[in-house]
Length: 141
Image 1 (cartoon, rainbow, N blue to C red):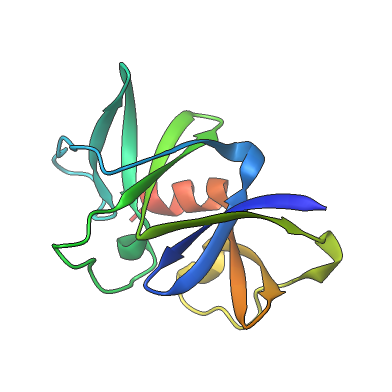
Image 2: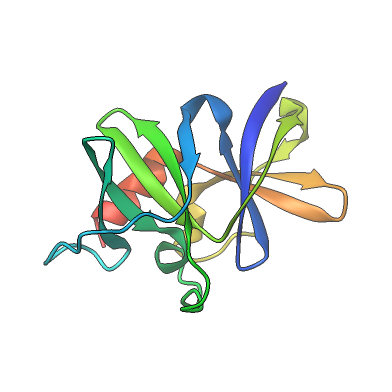
């Protein structure tokens, strides 16, 4: 059994392993950085720690978030330090049986590189976002 921190992006349900989540925080002011990939929205100051903020909507090729909707930061731990994923809405922490995870065969486009598996929930699918692969794609646009 694994636990996932879940979130929404344009009404699609995603999850990341809870042990890789450092914290979830409300919208933070970002400092823009020139000459970075489009998905990198800027840098945030997290109690003195400078953290790159990656907009998952942009990274996954989804429409822009409405200006009236501020993103939520899910700060995850990577081998290279903390990274903030900008998401629309935070969900619950859920328990997932490892036997119920299916390969992402129906996922197309650049999301295919970032989705590690699909888990069927009541009435919806949770896409397991591979944090390491997502950070690689975000850096290499």
